[in-house]
Image (cartoon, rainbow over all chains, first blue to last red; front, side, top):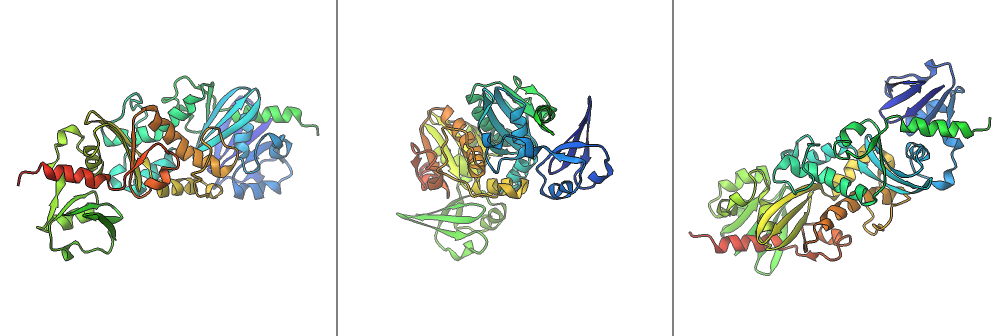
Length: 204
Length: 204
């Protein structure tokens, strides 16, 4: 079974045990002949995929009343994969969603690594540092690089941990954020787990 | 006595009870003849002001060993104004600094309103909402506008409040952020208070 999570930057495929990515800019989805079960948040790709009969959009098979209308399908599918906990999907945005006893209770959106980096740089060139994921979050910093790193990371850390729930980390930057959240379960395949759950319940 | 806080976007003057701003882009500081005590974080203005004899840079009169070398002089001067508490200066960046018994203990930098707004928009056009400062911070949101508002504001709120210190709010967006921090003391003249303290100790 071929699964695909289509984001703004890439097509992320899973087939059996293996998974791989194709660039959203250059990949032509009509080159695939077999059935592909997919979710898609990329507006351009959405239009293209709608026209392809072998690409099955899983968005139409989710019980949407548990979520809200403008919520990204990637966040919804990740929530479907988890029975209890917080899901942090660290990609171009960092989405944080809470599921309790299988029910979505709400979530928020924080800028991803690259967007936040650009945000600091846009304010002043003196803030042009890479984030330090080894920053000491237990005390307020006294240097510029740590001042922005702490600003980006400790604020997020503080909010997420306040819920005292198990944390699941997924998305392209999951392993980077795991440095800040060492107790988190990193699962880069979480969305595929959610997709498989949905597929199981489909009555064709 | 004429005081001036020179930022990246404006020259902020205080004279007696009144204060006013001039655009950093168009204002010509050599049009002022009287003595001006100033601080400046604007690299271009710094060069211009250095050449003007009646403009006195207060940066040279601060005990810098209490701070760190690349720390903005505006943050330092704000710390000088406070004996005990957290100072949040909400401008193009939001700087958060902690002073305990007159000593700076560290601080961090968070993107300002406009920079953060652009950050979300740069990720996806579907995140193009103004921030809702009336967002309910007591529960995780279930709509897109509140999801980014909560992401920007609750994370900051959570970190700042964790220190359990009196909070001083200054900067151009002080009144906007006061909606989120209703217990804060809003003082748009805080930097001028710090500057006056420094001037008192100058031996000419």
